[in-house]
Length: 200
Image 1 (tube, rainbow, N blue to C red):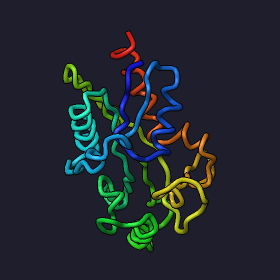
Image 2: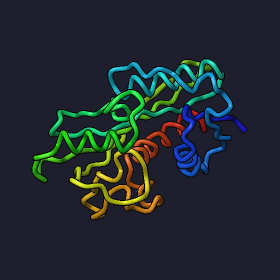
Image 3: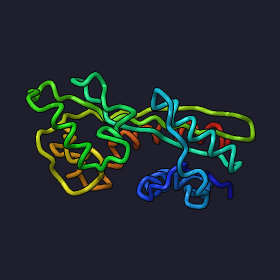
């Protein structure tokens, strides 16, 4: 069985990808076995550049087909910020709580209609054997609330309200979130590429 490396140490993310790709003949592994790859510098100017860099560097060092993603929150009122800086919006080692506080401060007196936002994910796959690479992206539209709600998820999930579900991402059951999230949308597109390029 061929191995597929997920360039992440996030167990939740790896579990999610494993569930989505269960019909493919891959053994899916994370970066836990490759500590030297855990801190690849994300210095690209777009989600796509960061995702592709993580996939390429990891693939070339391990000689394994690699899947990587970069994702974040884009708030329309803030001209797409925090974007690629979502994880470090309020500083280099910022906590989710600190990032959420900063976001609420920046949107302090902004009315409901102008608080539109989306979670965006760009996923990249890289094959070190022939330099094949491809990126896809997925979005999930929503709105930023004035107070956090819900206990599930992480990051900006407690503030991100999904109109069609009438709940924040943090209030949704994981199996629902995994169907509508930006990462799920990107993964759905990536499955088609994996099927065409690696399973024919």
